Length: 95
Image (cartoon, rainbow, N blue to C red; front, side, top):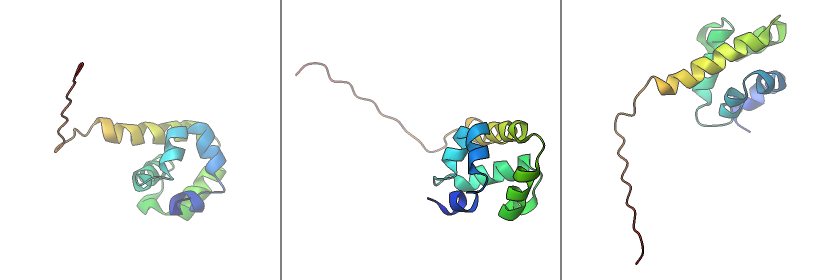
């Protein structure tokens, strides 16, 4: 498991239920972006993990906040165009 996923282990089932894409991202190289989205949704400054955990645990309605976090996380990628990417596809039919 990644550092972030280990740190958030107590609340991971809540995150997995309300924001499955975000929960998966916590175990990936994109975990920092996922933690930022959680911090924003749960009103935590500076991505302070203990505060994120406390706010998730004490939230009356974590599902709405998790949906907001997941939306922020996914929009991070849809709003940023690939800048230096090139895709070349070659199809060869037959021999």
